[in-house]
Image (cartoon, rainbow, N blue to C red; front, side, top):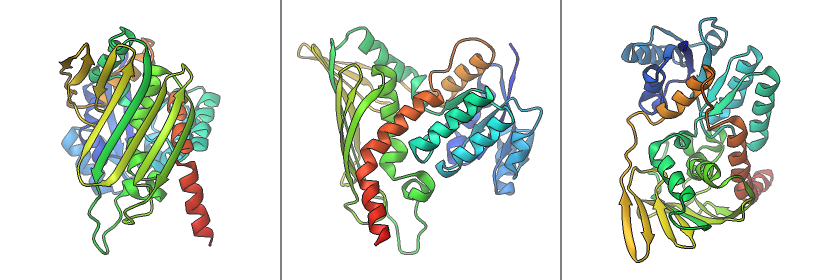
Length: 333
């Protein structure tokens, strides 16, 4: 198999441990160039990770003849632009999540890559992590019997933002597309799509209760999978504690797992509780990166595509639809 040569656009926090090393540690994969608008930071990243080339110009990555595929690790507001530019020159794309600011942008990216004949993958890496594959395996093996419902809950303390402090990008809708819910819970919905298939109906009530910033900080949602499984969730990012858990409810029992923490999977059945430890690897993107490299070498398929990620974007848009409409109305007054 040939070695896939990667170029990286954006080399901030997510690329430091979660993703970046995976491109030079995966089999038949190498990271040959990195880009960041701040050239000094790009050079520093390249030096520390043993990357031979750096630049402050994304076009130098996109146009490079010695780069086979591009990883886009910038903020959400630029994902569509960089993806379309890569498609125009025929470069396969692996883009961070959330895939784009809105579902409509995601579909533009899917269409552009399809028309250009290049694959598009999205960084929903939980589709390849052993801990989550164990959850999928247990569901398929009937550990809780036929599944009836999925329930998610998350509470987190509000961020401390002082007067004059810059707003963290994750809760700046102009950069991230929304707040903590939009930026992080998409991982949960994407994994549930992976296990149970597409969500075909979703409704949400969202608000900003803390007043600390504009984006949503409390969300309640209900949704239905095409298979008939129903789901619900509540998320509050202005609470007094940190807690996050998902529960799959079946005819014979329940299963609990965390999206955000490498906690043991818990099976509650027949008045017993079993725990299944499943640690995450040090570079959580690496297993998914390996599936991309293998696909480019004609061996298998990556499970996280632009098409599957666009479905998750649609769910997020549906849940936040009324909240966003209210923000637009308030801005117009």
